[in-house]
Image (cartoon, rainbow, N blue to C red):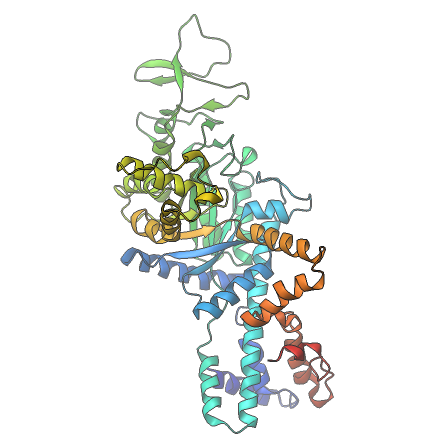
Length: 530
């Protein structure tokens, strides 16, 4: 509804009430526009539609891939979107990612924890709600500034400026974007997964990512000791998430099915198989087995029939069963096809390195069965991107017969190589990795799971080194505040960012000329007016 229509509607309501003469219709319209999303479900339905449209656009043109950065606090998410709008003018195809790793490391009441699903599961929907609270506040702040500009244009009698601002209000683009939210392995059985998924959706999540690890043995995707579950167990959790979406009326909610099979060599269970070639039989076909005989049979052995022979899956002291080495890629392909054929919308293949050809080789096989298969890919800080890509270039050059004698492959991370042709080519491959991956490996969405964990550490280290050292206050002023001012970082006016001006507007709505406002002549934020 256009701004003027909002005012007219509010005016009709006020007139009907008869005793509401102190209520201003335009102020009501402004408050309504500043609070467009009433509930998390409003957000989930709105953002699910965005993701579906983006997926359809990507299927037509793979250059239209999407991106996100991981968050661990609402303020971080807010600042990303404010920055995106500032630098690019639009939030289109830019999302937020909620990382279970960062929730565990930074949001648990137990203190910092590894990524093993030991944190409170309620902290995940709580962070979703917090992220959207901050994004909605970013809308309220930015619209509030437009309303102030509108009032100033009217007072100056500048009709052209007034029309321009009214157009900006009517075509305002919200900071609210899709969040891909990590539910780990579901924090329990399928019922537990369903209950948590509901909380996440009610908080605003339109897209939930779930992995095929055993819930109570869950490990970070880039750690050792990962244990997967049979497909039917995983599909039960995918169905649980879908039921949660449908129950809450988010009919086009999205599910990202993540497979950790590439790096997971263990399983806790032997899959149930009803006939040769079914999904349970296929899962069991990857088990590392030895033929059993009366002589080597012992009490407690689990036995399967493989090609007419009784075989004993190799079991570790931990009571876990192991897969045959070298089967990870084949298991990933089977996992992905099975998930897409049973309700998942997007895939996530957790890899041990950022290598497009490795990813593309698996996606190509998946697309032979599901032609429009699309990936969400973790551009992980767990990878040493510099070393990996320099080694990839080294190997490519060596294979092509190019002289690499001046390079030591094991030491390519060294600063000594930074200005070499090899390093420059590696950096160019890193720069184009996302576009190349979208085109050649079916990657619809690129994300970095833990970027702000690392940026917070790096910036704090640099500030502490200077502030507590010889530079003192200059360490803050030169490297933080002066840069905020010159780069136009909104947070330099931190009172405004925290909602002080919004509060002043409300005081004026409520009390008129009697309002005691904070933004007067003596507010030190006026020092940053220029």
